Image 1 (cartoon, rainbow, N blue to C red):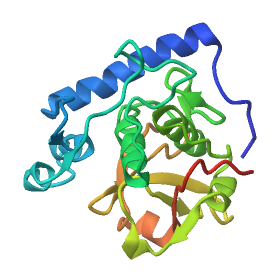
Image 2 (image 1 turned 30 degrees about the vertical axis):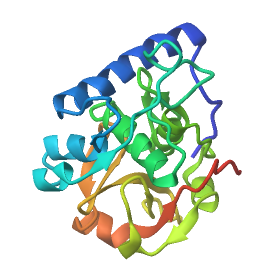
Image 3 (image 1 turned 45 degrees about the horizontal axis):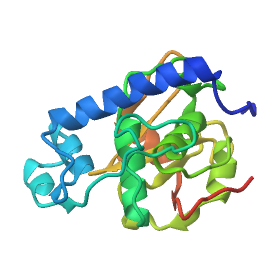
Amino acid sequence: MTRTSGYSAPCMRSSARSRRWAAVLALIAASGWLPVAEARDPIMELLAARGVVPSAAAAASVVGEPIGDSEGGTPNASTPGVFRRDDEPGRRSAALVYAMAYVGVPYQRGGTGFEQGVDCSGFVQVTFWESAGIRLPRRSVEQAQATQAIEPDALEPGDLVFFNTQGQSFSHVGIYVGQGRFIHSPRTGAQVRLERLDDRYWRSRFDGARRVIGGAASG
């Protein structure tokens, strides 16, 4: 996998980010979540709206108020992460909400953006950086090295799942959604989408689970 420089030119980046966050907020609005001091967990509401988890599970989850920028709108380059929280699970949930806005974005080798498309590791990198301010390495194998190994039965939404798809360990990566599903950018000609871990193809190539801890900068 070729290493590329990080992000787009400022004007394109701003435009793409605005549309991306508009999509995120539209998805959350459609799920019925409102930014008040006590509200249902947006990620659970979003997943329930998409049929990933039961509605009852979403109704049982409550979170605190999200944090936006000084204008109360979309985040700028210096303040990534409109849903940042002090706790690790909250930051992973923020990344997962953000990742859902990429569903339908085409695969692009070396891509790291909404307009240009994304490859598997670029998708994970930009998701965690722009949603939670967590900087992960560019390549999937480096992302595995920079994160904490966990048992598969300990997987929680926002954790990373790795696969051997090219005869090499950790050659593919996705973000665990919950209920046995993950979101990823699979291959040339495909788009960012949800898959099941127990699908025969992915089950036979599963290479382990990792948890993003702290800033995770490494590699």
